[in-house]
Image (cartoon, rainbow, N blue to C red):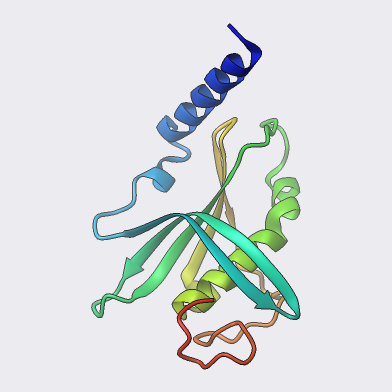
Length: 158
């Protein structure tokens, strides 16, 4: 077998292991009625910084009006992390990225950050780590309004 086919086979095995793991099951088994976004790109301006990103997976929970009232954001990580690495070390590495993603999603959906849970999903070894909302956001936020200066409050996206 060629080196590239070996790598592809190992990657497929890792992904399947993650999908089938109990620790990551909530990312792949949304409740009935959930709206699912996969690989959804976004562009946003925060505090003078242009941010381009892709939401790997988002579960949107619609209210009676059909508009989302809560969301769960999942960001997949393929870098291999030893199980003995503490969660705080891993959170420290990705906290800013996840806070930006949470704020961007909140701006798109007109949801306050408190209504958006965020998780890092490691493919190997399979691991799910919740990223708590920051008590002191690194970027300015105004819940229920666009996070892009100059856009009207009813702006629905970037």
